[in-house]
Image (cartoon, rainbow, N blue to C red; front, side, top):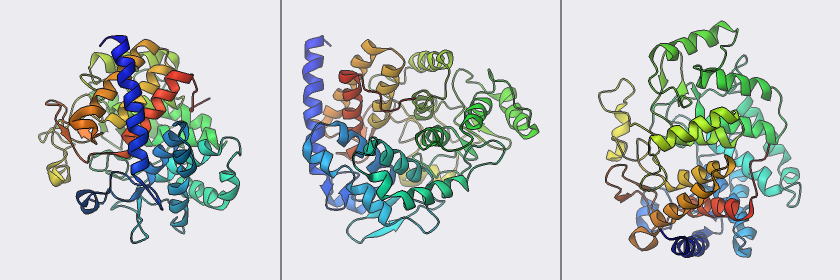
Length: 395
């Protein structure tokens, strides 16, 4: 696409993203998607922990006063429904004012809530960290209860993070990238051990194996059988692991400061080689889990959703595409990042600017819930980073 046309498209997408987020505002906070009858039936017309947190950051960076004023509203509603043990709900139903914590417990809503509170607070300008200090302490305490006391990485059930019908369990890449970010933001203890063990377990091919014999046992299985060795493993459990190529987890490892410069370049080059950004950024995995694979679970066919090249199992996620652009910016690929942002705008423009939740990974047919809030928010986040050079991840 000609640079001028690309610039025009990006500008229009930015305006459309602001418009979509305004339309999806509710008194309780930003809804996951436009509140249609179908969205209500599927539970999308609610305040989701991870969605509201990611949206809050995009809303803050939007430059739109209405969105900035409403950015923390969903976080406040989630805080009001925090569990007694400190966990933040997967979602809060605004109409019935009730919280849902998911079948096996949603681990990443608490992580994203903490991240958004800290980033929106911006050094105390909103007073959020002070106002929610008791809730923050409980949230951190709940997460620390999930932390392995030798690896200093979070442990979780399968199907209990954003990829909620995928079989990742034990130590999960995506979750622990966020955990390290939380540790940095809140100056939590043992972050250096988290960093070391993250690289030792999720990329045992280049990292020195830890002296702790449990680490050697876990890593040995991957060293013997893994096929995709230029990316971080999607998860590591007692005797099995994921090497499908988790794009979101790998991108977050770069953004959250876990990858060395050499590893960061290897990840970017590998994802480009796998063409996860074509024709739109990005596919959720490099290679889907097939029904013949030992990792396949019957629940992956729930709603006929997670078959190969669909949903989290190889579908194209514009929300993750926003983080892909952010990773390119952070890694010095600015020209490519502008090109990818334009492709992200083209994906948003499908079906007259539907901002679809995901697209089929092979046919590219728009799928999932339309008018998805976090698609708009991550586009604004990525566009802001490219235009201003501001890095919300920091060091």
